[in-house]
Amino acid sequence: MAVSKDYLDWLCERLEPLGPITPRRMFSGAGLFIDGAMFAIILDDILYIKSDAQTAPQFDAAGCDPFRYEKKTGTTIVTALRRCPDDAFDEDDLLLDWARLGLEAGRRAALKKATRKARVKKAPAKASRAKKVKAKP
Image 1 (cartoon, rainbow, N blue to C red):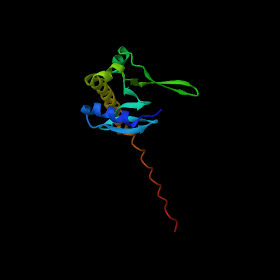
Image 2 (image 1 turned 120 degrees about the vertical axis):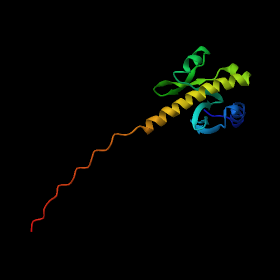
Image 3 (image 1 turned 60 degrees about the vertical axis):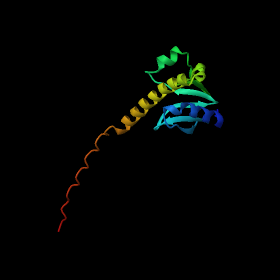
Image 4 (image 1 turned 90 degrees about the horizontal axis):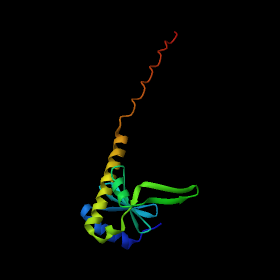
């Protein structure tokens, strides 16, 4: 799985109205991030958009298949990444609409992750006081 630089540049240019996009190498492809939130990934020059429980019905209605990959143990399906509909590439506004769904899902995931990290950890147990031993004269 790889991504061509030309395709990556072309896609980032088309998605630029969403905000400054930072591509990062991921899984032999490139993850697309805005403000630290991943909203899409490109693998084999195919755009997969981030999805979650709130956006999955829209992806399902459009027939967007989840990302799949083969392992020795069988096929693994990643429902959090959905293939962008082919017709979205015909119109910039449509592509941006799909990417916005991914960005919303990515921001929710980033918020959930940050919230988990920020949870107050259980207070450490108080150290027991050492018994005072009187020295014998």
